[in-house]
Image 1: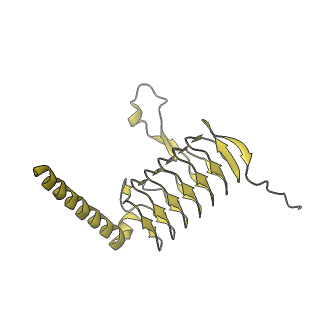
Image 2: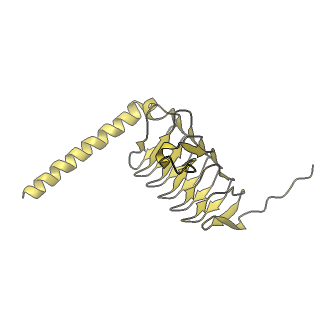
Length: 196
């Protein structure tokens, strides 16, 4: 009996909390997003490393449950229109992350433009700072479940990255890449060179 009562109380608290978070995102979007496009859908409410950062979300984007957006003070996360970030996607930016229009990103994907420095064994790793470079993901890219995209990577338009791949090098347009580390196994389309 008491368990059922407490269950209802906690559920009510959870619903109120979700309502207040949703209300704050849409009533005060500039706190969380530099730009929040029209017709965006939130399946759950994203978490943020910091507020008042340069996070731009295009029109008609969908964010799944548990999405985490972490943007440094001098960085930007720019997400195009009609982009889907599935459940538990993690974006961490100190140098810049750009995602093109119509891109689909599977659940549990980690996109990080930075790594810890660790070369000095006399200083704890957490005290050595970061190293990194901007990430650019093109238009109409599909990134499968559990993929890691590392610093400085560029993924061309129309590329497909297989589930659980680790992308540490650039992937050309329309390539299909899989593995650890990710390697191109075929192309969806062979681009023809135009005469000059």
